[in-house]
Image (cartoon, rainbow, N blue to C red):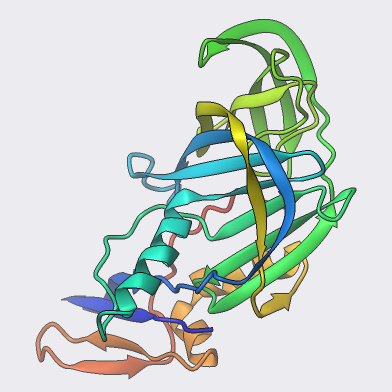
Length: 285
């Protein structure tokens, strides 16, 4: 596994130094080794709009995400993250340095429903936590309350359903015209495909932007990487530690975090962050 990381903390002086922001170049992985675990017959393209910092509701991020639905399982992943991996691998064949790419809102998770059967597998590939992580859990149970209210999404007549899931209250719009128990991210458990879903605060909004019945079936790939096995709670705790004190976390991983004094313009290595990074996880419990 090759990992490229650059962390720079920019410091400003007021009444003493305080951390203002940092720049992070994400990791990447060579994804040329994989297992084909199914063949997809339906492609669903979703746009995720989400809030990284709950204190700055005007600053939204977005990601282009894809759901492949096969006969026995499905796969959900970030198209941005996949494109970044492929681009960096090709770029480094011709250059000695990493490409400069503006930060995008891509998620490094890939989520497999009913793989293995009755469970779901979640991978976190080239994570900002340094490395690749994987966990399995039972297929989530959603206590949906289906209503008679309808709405049109992508020219499909959709029905409204609501539920509470891991600390957030969601409204989903699903269509009986596509009688598939699936949807973006971990969502499912309805008698039709979920085309739109959002939480009560609009921190996470998923909306389908395109559906394609595939003439040629697409291989559903599970990448063969060096994974650290964890459970969901352990991975969430690692993300919390990273955001609470990313300099300390990166030091444990052997990565230096440098800060610059704006007066001397000199960099120094720090062991702890002077402020937390914004953290607004989709699962609150």
